[in-house]
Each structure stands twice: as structure tokens, then as C-alpha cells.
Length: 545
Image (cartoon, rainbow, N blue to C red; front, top):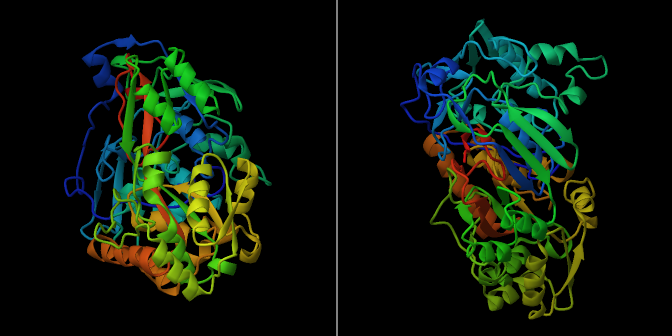
């Protein structure tokens, strides 16, 4: 997942629970039809929940949304066919689809839709045409999120078919067990009102992208009451939500954009906010002693790393190995993260399918780093540039201190987010790029290909993706080409091989840490569910007080 504005990566689990294959009428805990909910109990209003976020909503169109500030709103106003089952990244429950099945080789998937689902636009009811159009549009519009489904679907108008108003079918030339994982993607797999989209299409904008960017076209539990761009989004419950409103729920959600960590901490400390996240490790440590809040650290699928540009002093794999040995990982984990992180060992996070726990691990060894720099022809007196945005200055300072002991100077350059992203996701040649740049990354779903392809695939260098160091390795490209169509043991085997090459043999980056995702909540807040794929977003329907 691209955590900041621009394009994004891909990802998911290969083998699905056999209990879901060929299933019928599977209902999820906490999700019921409106009729069932009304019969269970009445709505109990928990009032207003206030969130202070560091990122703001900028784009609500699933075909292009690449910002977690937008995701935080979109996943509450829109629905997918299926969703990750609460805390699981490999099991699923029904949302807009009540049941699904596949043929024996999983090349044909059939989904039966929920009846009576109303859109926020006022239209009733959702049909298979909305599903077919929403996913086809994401592919055909060829915006930044098109990659997710185009991995599986090359001809959406033929491969996604409407069987009847409440049945949609996906057909493939080979077994596609990862389809469920992709359909559960909380960012790109959202289903919108196809009639509203078509009504606002123009010759210059045939997919109504500009309009969809700022309009609520979903079926989710909340709808947008107001949106002050860059400042505040107010959501209110959608009374006709298909899931019903049985029991305790918040009727209003206020999401305020507050970039400063210190201000967000103060607001939650003083009880003026119910939940925040992405505070500094020092703030998290201090708040853990505050009895009025709950500090909830959970490990996710995010990795923090810094790329090394394959040019100049770091063109040689030996030089990049040297930097990997020189870095002081313990100082980072214990000093900067204050223990709210664990080591990462390559482009595949430890909680994701395909991670090899027995893979090579770098450790701090300055003597080994000195030998490898000599082997690469990098001499004392060399200057390297480390260009960063907040909050990665400590990474640069640690690296600077370590390489200084080897006679190598690290020049630190701080940029604001806009300037940093222009370089990181820009098209400048390797020779004119900084030597090193830090970044966080996580997948869309539980799959090593989705996680790794835009980080280390040659075709995603520069402006084409997140391969910011212009890394090129023929063996890695060959493995990725195979992984794109694999599942099961072959996918895991090739993921292990990719992890070995991109860490031990030819590292494109120094893989720093898997930071804990720390959410700070008012003690009175209940219903929080953490999923390792759903980073810095919340499903407000489950919350209550």
C-alpha cells in the first residue's frame, strides 16, 4: 500500500480456508440483515466519536485512492463483496455478497449478492451490474489503483459477467485462489453506484473520476454529512444500512485532521478526542502510564526501510551490503522506536505469507562493512546523501554516526512531504537521485507478490512505482513474473528465494523495522478490532461506548 499520495503496491494470501470454498449463505459475526438486526434489539446511540488523524481525506474514488487519510473515510461509507474476518488476514466474511463458490480448480468464482441494499445516493437496490461496473471501471480507468485487479483480469467486460441481477461471476484461464483476498481489499475493491457514475461521465472524463473523487456513492454504515477539505470530515449513520443498527453504535463520527503529534496527544489526554494514532514513540511511552486512555500496540504488515540508489557509490551490491552491516539496528529499535518495533529482514514482512523465518539476517558489524566497501571500491572520504521527510531523521543520524567511523560522510537533507514525494516517486535518473531515502510500506492483501513487486520489480522504477532506487535484478524479475500467477507451495518457495536475493545477495534497501501500529483510545471506547492489513484506518461501525 502506498501510504502517501501517489500510486500503490499489491498483495494477499495464496491458500484460502477450505470452509469458504463452495460455501453458501455464510453470515459473519456482527453482520446481519436489517430484518435480523431489528428482530434482535433496538439501536442504542453511543453519541459522537471524535478522531484526530494525521492524514486528511483527499480522494474517495477506489480507482485512484492511494492515501490512508482517504481510506479511513472510504472504508466506512463504502462496502466490499467480502471482508477480512476481523483480525484475520486469511479468512473472510460476507458483506455485499452473502455467499460464494468456485469450481474445483478455482478458475470460476460465483458470488450471490445481498438483496435490498440501498446506496447513499438514494437508489435501491444494489445489483450485479454495480459490482461488474465498479471493478471493471477500476481496471479500465487505468488510474493508480488499476494494478490490483488487472493482475487477475485482462478483459473485465468478458471475465466479469452478470448471471442475473443478484449473481456475478468471475472467470479466469487458470486457478485464481487469491481472488477472495483481492476482493477484500479495503481500498480498491469498494462497490459504488454504477448508475450515478455513468450519469456524471463526460467525454473528457468517461469514468467520472473527478466527480467520484469527492462524492459518497457507497452502501456503508456511515454517510458524509460534511467535509471541510484538509480539516474535518463528519460522518453520520446511514439509517437504511443493510447491516442494521442493532445494539450500541455511534451515530456520528468526527474526523479532525491534526498533523502535529504533540497536539493529537494533548487532545486525547484531555478527553477531547476518543482515538488517535501515529504518535511519537516517546508520546506512546508517556501515555501508557495514563489511566484514562488505552495504548494499543499491534504488529502489522508494515516495514520501514531506506532504499539505496543503484548508482554512484552504491551501484555495487557489495557497497549496499556494507551499508546493511554498518547500520545500528539495536539503536534504532530501542532508541528511536522505544521498543515499539521489531526487526525486518527483506521486503516481505514477518506476518505475511511467504516470509522465510530462516532467511539471512544482517547484524551490525563495522569490520565486515569496511571490507565490503573496499571490495566495492568505496573509499574513506566518500560522501553519501540521505534525503528524508518526517519522522525519519533519527534513521539518518544513526547511519551518519556509524559510517563516520568508516571515514564516510553522510549528508542529511530534510524535505517536506511534497518535495520528498516528488523525488521518491519522480522520474529523475538514478545518477541525480539521493543515495538513500527512507520510506514505510505495506501490502493491500496477504500475498508476497503484492507486497514486493513495486518495491523491487524493474518495471516499477522511478515514477512507475515505488522502486525509488532503480533496483534491477534479473533473477528477482524472473521470480516476480512467476509469483504473479502462483499460489500455495510454489508461491512460498519463490518468495523465500526473492527474500534471500533482496537481503543477503543484492539488497536494494536496508530493511530497518516492522513498527508496531500504536492506537491510543479513550478508556470508555469499546469494539476496537485490529487487522494487520488495515493500517491507520478504523471501521467505526464496530465501535461503541
